[in-house]
Length: 438
Image (cartoon, rainbow, N blue to C red; front, side):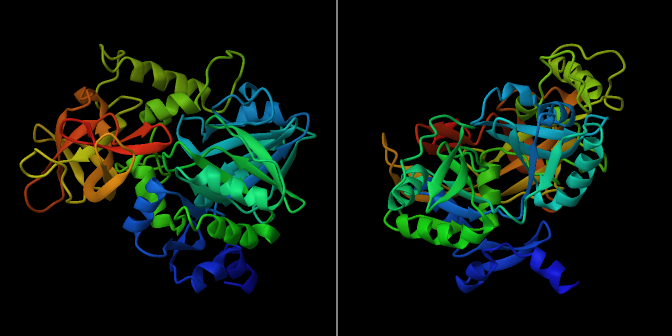
């Protein structure tokens, strides 16, 4: 590997992470911090206060010009025309013609003809090549890879907006107000604009993602931590980023999207509610990549609670498995379990094979004082996402299942609607059985 290639695999904050004692590991082609303290402490700190994440390993593509919207309406499953004015964003997917995901992405409309598309770091090169090829149909379109020019930070948790505006106040600028999820704005810090969006990957209701110029990123990172010292803001690594997203039930490419445990591509509609947010069929004239296949998947998924369409038995379904949330129980089935399940472990329903775990771990959560948002103590529980056979019709939350880890007795678990609930500016863990707030 050349020196230039080695540099490209480090974010601008790499030296800061190392000097702070972070445990570093390769992720998405980058040397990234996994944790600074412990994953558990950083998870709990984000939920109670706020966490600051370096996510500059993600790809950042700038799309602009008069043909930006026609291009995006063709390339992405969600409809860019629905971002009717600057200042909004949405979740969307790069699909192939078979209705499977090349990547899941976020699209931000930052100006009248300017859009920012964020893709997963591991798929950066492939996504860029695919978009460039598609862009040939749109002469005059300007497509730029700005991953080196713009960094990307996430500030997530109840204190996030207060801390950011404390930094803004130091610069003498007006406070930024992003009152709704997916809102996008700009803030001027020391003469330079920073794009700020109320988006994130932790399930936190107060979630911010920032796009500073690379040259100003280290300074901004340190100022956020300094301003957040009294709010107990912590730098957080990718370990807790994964446990937080799993607790929120959010997919990760390579686990709930991409190639499935059976070696076959995962159909996008297997994501159920997440897919409904990412795929828009409202305009019958919009022929985006994968539309026909996705429409057929949707018909089948919508009929899963009734009689299935003709020719869609277990071996012929377009969506043979569905991504579902799991809560693992203890052996007596009367409280949350803490025995972790992992990707690839088999799922059983009535002792018959029903699918596989796609993501699983033990996560910490706060047990709150009654009637308050004040965390009193922490506990641990095992949760997961799983790829569950659609033909079994195990669709109701609360359906008992079990997980075979390949040794010992299978662990009891439940299919659940959610493992995390938003309560105002905070989140609360949902504990099973009984679906009670922690």
